[in-house]
Image (tube, rainbow, N blue to C red; front, side):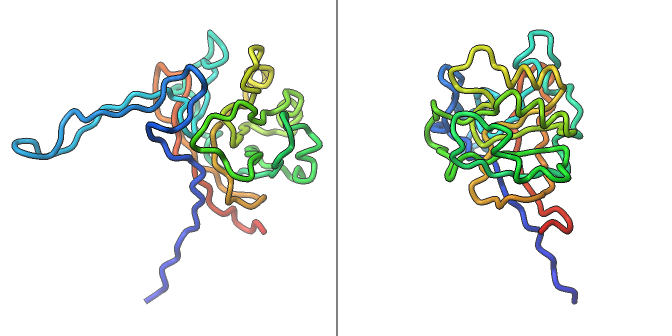
Length: 217
């Protein structure tokens, strides 16, 4: 009998529960039970309330553009395929081009940047690292279609102008936020992070995972 081959997976999604951090003022995760097993009831059924930005999530253009498309109408191709994880751990408030230059040769169309040594999954980080808008523009010029980050936003937490979100809007890129890249070495992977088909929403939770990319060192 042939040996069973086990696929290596990196789960890069944080846990979602009632203590999961959210952007200040956003709707946290809440769950209540509509039905529980017992007596005449054969099943457990819950109801949940949450911001679509809780946990690992995909932003839709509607999030940063009043006339932008909703997440349920986005093509899925950018969220599935060849990506590169680049480390910029402790780089400061903004990911600048110099923090990524060491890993940009033959760049695939998806880039995920690790900024934390360990992601603070139990608290919101007011000092989160974000992308510099010029970095977004330079990545787009190299053919990048999706940018991801292990913080809650591609812009600084206190930003009102949202320059990186606006760069993404102008250039037609897609965004993943709140990833957990703590145990992921730099290198190339297959990304799988499909948003839900929420036809009116400005974002969607994703269960983001990585698989080894063929022939990647």
